[in-house]
Length: 114
Image (cartoon, rainbow, N blue to C red; front, top):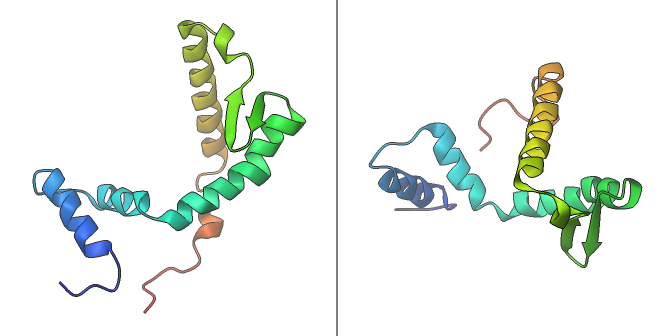
């Protein structure tokens, strides 16, 4: 196998782990899980945007070094946690109904780049 990147062995491993067959989405997720640049990008988003808003502006979370914590989490029972997760899922669904592809700004090209 000649390699210019990790794509081929990652795809082969995904196929092997999934009994010989996987969708392009499953393979893409396997590739994404090994893409350190994406983790670094979302760490930046967490620190400079969402983490800042929820911690400094709204006081919903707190931060100690690199660790975020949900304020009042210890007082929540299982039902309350489930309800809050459902509310968050609902907010995501509402947002995606209004904006079908909120990540379209990240699609820089429409085809293969050599």
